[in-house]
Length: 462
Image 1 (cartoon, rainbow, N blue to C red):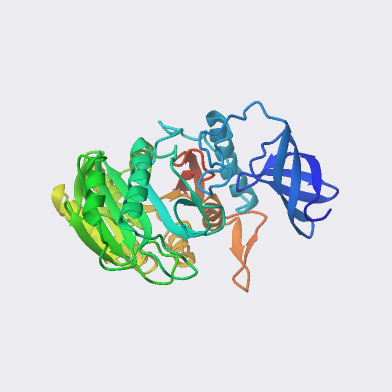
Image 2 (cartoon, rainbow, N blue to C red; image 1 turned 90 degrees about the vertical axis):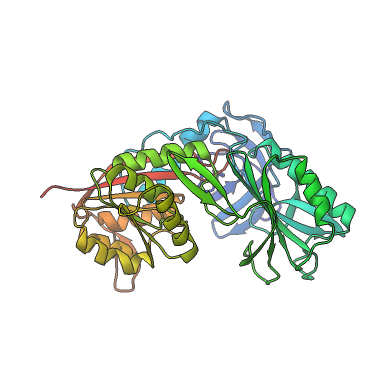
């Protein structure tokens, strides 16, 4: 087998990136957009040892669950991986991804609940983030292709509400009329780098990421936005650094107010242009409600607490909750949230690293439930060691990455252990301090390979 060979294969399984897996002559092929059971003609694009990567040339025998993608650039844009798969089968696939990760990475054999569906399988995202660039002498607005910074021009995105299409058209119009260029990563030229929009209950925070402090014709952009949104704020965010970071540190308010008040699950909070909010409102509500229900009698220690919405839910339900967050701005938002909701004395927000703050807090609150909602990289090893040393009665984990979830659970359950080099290796039998009471996936991100998972660990009675 060589690069550019054309071969016919049948997919046997699905990989962690939701690609089809086929085998041919001792070589394992990974083929994006190929479903298990499908026979297809594919072209080899890369070979590395007994692993090869291929792309579909023709589907010979389509699977029953294959559907027509709604997006015209589905196979080129890197945002979605599953629009060709019927939605109920996406849910089965994602539960399988979680189960397989726990088994293969963490050495954990456990029942995984069916994946909770999203109320909307399209049009669900409350956040739009688009790179703006310049390719072949033309401005381009769209999404990055898979594993690249090449922008795929996009006029419509079906996983966003209809306002996103209007925003893309308005930005294109604005740049053409006012002679503005998208950012060229090679020459480091161009004035417009990204556009980021957040919807909060029909209120919108629009941010243009720019490389110069002043943008000509900005009043025309406001005029165009007036025709799309009834209530919005417009910000300029200055970022001229040679970096992959989308946002710089400086926001300039051009129109509207700096933040909007929003009420969700009985909690009133304010969100600004850089406030983290889960992208799927309906799924977020069910996930947070279930997490609060599982926390038990309290108190609750909410690690990686962000702006404090989940901490406030715990405080309201159990009367005492602590949030640990390293970002000072987020802690300030959490403090304001506590005051706004009358939770002073019930909600304590701590600014610091979880690995520094958790142990002394558990020493005081021996009966606390610990909630972990880390970034994709997962929980720091020092935090896991603290949990094993302090042994709280209950640990709830929320994860957007099955691989790091499996790793972290393996350490907590003892199915993974460190060798003398700090490497994790599987063990024949884990310790018995904790048992898994629930593994519940949530489809926070329909049409994509991503899945959110809630896990409940209960300390065993001695």
